[in-house]
Image (cartoon, rainbow, N blue to C red; front, side, top):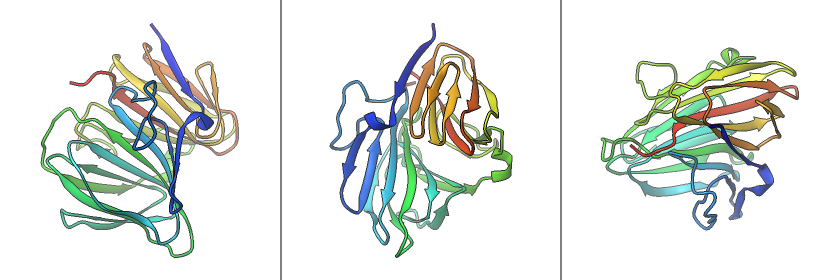
Length: 240
């Protein structure tokens, strides 16, 4: 049976620390909503704005798949595995925290804010060896098309994580769209509108709105505004 949950942008939790202005789709840190704990194994979807020259100091994680998608600006990543990297709009970063890792993420610019999505997915394996990866996406392949940017398979398109999850991104002109087909019928799909407006099935979503849907195997997406950008996250609804 089809089930739908809609999270309007304005309904998200907010934490403004001065250097960081963050919107939380799901309960996170000081924001707690028992109706917003997760969407299946999608545990965190934070929409972060970091001021110039500021950032997240070195801190630990374990047993979580952490995905970062920059929307504007440049982030500088450093971690206890020895990785030092810059990620910018058009890139995607993944870190399997596994048995434990420490990292920092700073705004590389001294004048401009950086905006990025911080996403946590609960893994299907615990205590794996920590690892880091990032890739640059083919922006032309996202024009009026859904491009797979994450999967469970290291040999597939995009980055990979320890979970039966698939992420896709698309940039659509007005009235253009695509049809998305589930990889596993028992998975759920979370649709997040990065920019513009989108019709997902029968539901109109505005910028930064989210829609979680289960119980179906495909959905038609159509842009209701020029330069509409969307992120799709297909995830298991039960922990394995």
